[in-house]
Amino acid sequence: MSEKLEIRIKKGSELTNDEINEMYEVRSHFMNLKTHIPKHKDFAFFKVTITTANKVFLFTTKSGSIKGLYAVTQFVERSKTTGKKRLVVEPEFGFVLEEYQGRYMAKTVRKNAVTALIKYPFINKYLLGPAYPASYLTLEKYGKNVWSWLDKNVPEDIREVLYEYAVRHDMVEQNTFSGIKSLYTIPKKTAAKDIQRLESKPSYAHYKLLNPNWQEGYGLVTLTKLNLSTLLYQATSIFRKK
Image 1 (cartoon, rainbow, N blue to C red):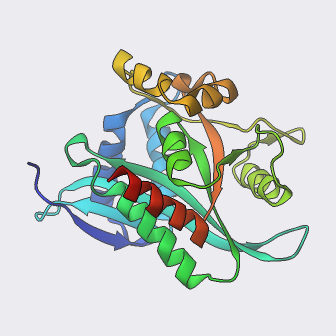
Image 2: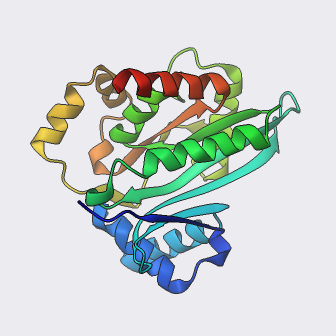
């Protein structure tokens, strides 16, 4: 059995160059670069993103070796249509090496969500970002509702948050947002058994309909609300599973 990891939390601006290099290696373990993206360009993007994150959770051994990370950028903004405040939470990177999976990431995501609920009790809270199938299915499994720009009948407040995300990340061209984010990386080749596992999930057919080229390095921008009912739904789902 692998050793228990410690969880340290830092602001992105507090990270050392050695920590950034180690985290990049963890990410590289899971992702390949697209052929036209040079490594230095991807590393520069990673470094800027990770150092501007509000919170970076480091999963480390007792000796300090980094085995995983979860980086989050979150901020309060005002709706352009209603003027109401809202909290936007954007997970930037989340990886844990295989031998440690299942014990840290989900717990950390939940902990950060609970912290947001306590700190911002009276405003709407949204979690969003580009998702591959595994992340999408996890969100749908433990979230009460998951939306994308390409879904039908998306509530207006959800559509506004998704569009503002697209503007913020330079994804709007000629006033059009595709709902899909082209990433610098592609997932490492997915084994046939993993594809079969995905295809056994009813929600995967819907995801694939919206984002058929995901294996070429395209993430479906998805959103779920962070609220008490979502956490209760999640807790109930975990209880049923146990």
